[in-house]
Length: 281
Image 1 (cartoon, rainbow, N blue to C red):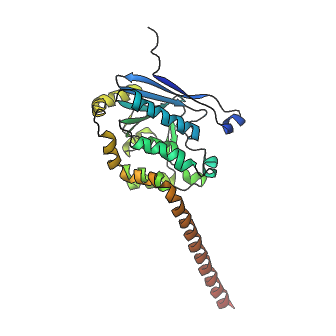
Image 2: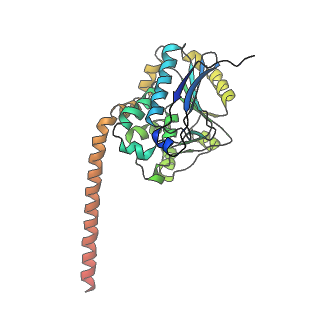
Image 3: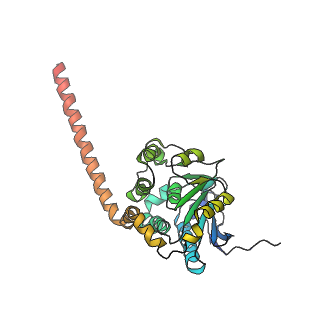
């Protein structure tokens, strides 16, 4: 029996930075039907599925096609690269581009968190930083039990957490788990992630299809208010994503206030040391 052709394929051109290092290769989003009304969206953007603008744009288009051209159902996203679900942002380029967060990354996350069908991130490998945040924007998460870690390692490379990045963890996880993630850069293998409620199950495509069947997600996907209910369920997350542009100004003001308080603290220390020095004389 010949293989069943994909429902659609979207190319992801290599980025200029990846091409210049010789690591660039043609990527793609391939949508197949894993079961009736269950869409498996497999992506690859070598070497590690970075969330660069062209990847985000293609991801959005794939979600649009599924919603507007296919019968309502369940969307599973996974990686065709065995080692990584996603290694997060191209951080240096992301922070240089003032449009990246409000016009590229956050619109993708808003689309996922309010998508009008059930979504499942099937994490076959590592999901670090922004990659894990993207998985958290799905309704459910299933993880390979044999390899891969989940980690928020912003502390390791000196990145702050913007409100639109942090709120999904506050809403979906316990504060203790979130604290251990961000202040310890703790790496969670699958079984630990399951225990902490970060994921909803372990396995591969077969186990994910079983999960969908047990949860009756295909039937639930037919509800016309599915997306509206998600907007209310996750309204704190949606609010932070929608206000991201305004938040940039608030964060800048917070940075200035932090610098002011730091300067005041240094002056207090200088005054104290001056007193101690005079006492010694």
